[in-house]
Length: 198
Image (cartoon, rainbow, N blue to C red; front, side, top):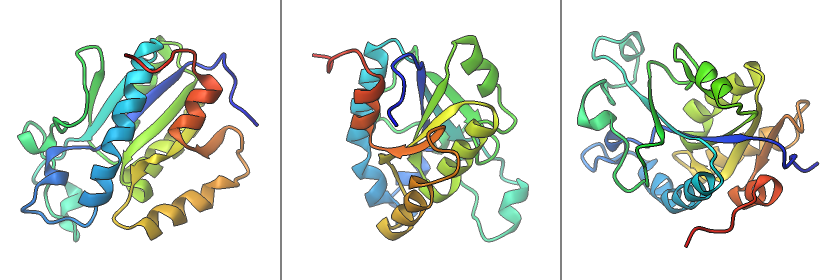
């Protein structure tokens, strides 16, 4: 079932931050994450051309954060350059930069209110990682009453196997068509009105 052209989508880009791409960290997700930069830029340009909101939501942890008492090492600390959106992504002053204290962009932030104020009905989620912060944001979007798209070509995990396993879990799901896994091109074809910006 196609999405309705009356939907007003918002693009939510998750955790594309400097620390993720830091060569010193040597993270396995770097190569897959680099591969989604161009598709995200293309899609964000189309969103702006249509007057649709673009949100960059990024980790903003603290060094003594509870989550770092386990195996996870401190990263993307609030107020540091490592928690900033990478320069390779097109970001404009009209885009909303939303630091988040946990994995989901909805947890303990004003995202739901911000989206409602702009009459958004559908959240298109991009970024990293497919199986972690992207997935929690997707689920929270549904829980907050937004139709939701998990963008298969604009999300990444440390391996393609992990990425595909998550996508396959939700390609067919009881919430369809409220929750869909589609490409950025399919999203534009189903909801879009503007041609590619020149």
